[in-house]
Image (cartoon, rainbow, N blue to C red; front, side, top):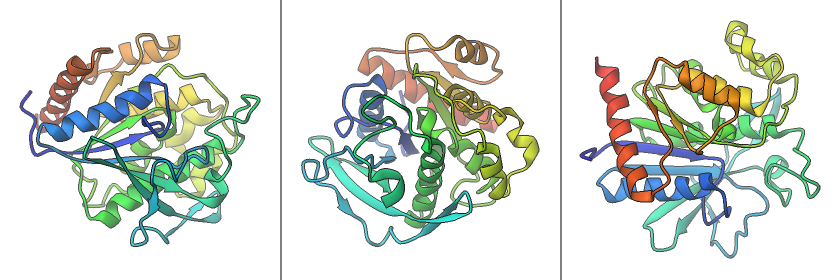
Amino acid sequence: MSLKNAKILTVSQYIHPFVDGSGMAKAACKLPQGILEKGNEIRVFMPKFGNINERRHQLHEVIRLSGMNLIINDTDHALLIKVASIPNARMQVYFIDNEEYFKRKAGLEDDDENFFADNDERALFFCRGVLETVRKLGWAPDIIHCHGWMTSFIPLYVRHFFNDDPHFEDAKIVYTAYDERTEPLDKNLAKKLALEGFDKELLKGLAKPTTDEMQKFAMGMSDGVIKGSPKLAKGLESAIKAMDKPTLAYHQDDAERLDAHLGFYQEVLEEALV
């Protein structure tokens, strides 16, 4: 596939080898690596979950990017940016960190597999943090590719918060939906977003928010949608089938997946020109 000199921002809930195991973590590592090797520019972001071993993965803070404060639910939270390299991949990953949201030694659940009550705010902080950092880097992506429900506020922020920002005004958004456990989110999520100035009409679908509803919400605001798992929850499958926008089927093989994604990015960019 001939996509070259494009700028691709990858934002993922999980990335291998920092978080092991899942199909999402592996795809969000392999894809940007392949995109880079094909002559494109990349930036890659994930949350700095407290169970990521900073010493083993050689994370260090990027002082020039840290130090901003983001207001989430009317409260100030300090934004820390860390970075690490993936061995043998010439690829750097930026981590969004914060003492309150990401210090606990866990990902999205406690030891008893209970979903954390503040995961909605952790996701909001993560998504805002990514976009603020990209602005600080002075980098304007052509494609913003989101992986996993935790990235699902990115389309909302890009379309309705940073819509006049020259870093994002031409960016196309691609969302990959995965087969994740459906979990309820804080029922006050729409109120928290209203505090940030979002129109209540936009937030109508979030009266009873769940991780699946957030994935649908993000897909609705994206320019293209990809299936990241062979099978998705029934509601997600139906939502994708009903979409009048470019969609891409699941690909398991790494090489096939890379080619399919490069072609899909091209399609989304060309669709915008029509």
